[in-house]
Amino acid sequence: MLKAFDAIGETLAAHKDHLTELDSAIGDADHGINMSRGFGKVREKLASGTYGDLGAVFKDVGMTLMSSVGGASGPLYGTLFMRMSMKLAGRQEADVSSLAEALEEGLRGIVALGKAQLQDKTMVDALTPAVEAMKKASDDGADLCVALESAVAAAQSGMEATIPLVARKGRASYLGERSAGHQDPGATSTFLILSTLLGSLKG
Ligand code: ADP
Ligand code: MG
Ligand code: MG
Image (tube, rainbow, N blue to C red):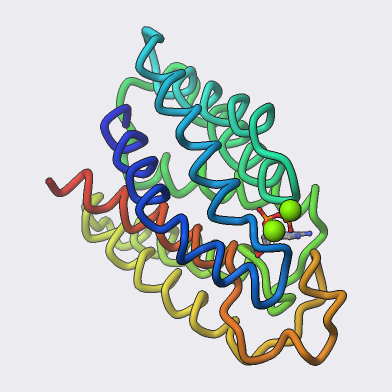
């Protein structure tokens, strides 16, 4: 997971301009800046820590994002990883079912905080189908890579499906109908995080 978070930081830095461009269309042009700064801090934090279990890793990720990322995405992603950490506490390894449960708990935290529903054009639109796919893979007894592959594919579809939507949460909602026709930045970063996690576990 330490390697995976390092890779996620690299991916978000590489996609900084892409994410910021998406946010310039329907927001305030800072999502790439926010995510690459936040995960830059995460990389620094994890590099200097020693960890006995996955819960402690995820807790540091969440707390670092909370304290270093302004805007909507900092508290939301901070909550995701903090809530995941509660489910992963005491674990040295995560199997499909524990990761599915942790992701579901993280999504619950995001929804409790941000009150977004499906099709409000947010990160929830990418994360919800990913969680569903993970849970189904877990029920089917799939291995971790297969499970994450299905989660990444579901997140990608959810991300792409945000394009025609009219935003009902976050800054993009201020644009009303004019928010349609653009992919949601937060759904895009969620997809990037999951796909990098998959790539890192495979590699
Ligand atoms: P800000 O909008 O404060 O500048 P960012 O640009 O970093 O913050 O993040 C914007 C993203 O946050 C959006 O693309 C959307 O996916 C997500 N977002 C905004 N509000 C909510 C919410 N209430 N619930 C879930 N996600 C949200
Ligand atoms: Mg923004
Ligand atoms: Mg902002």
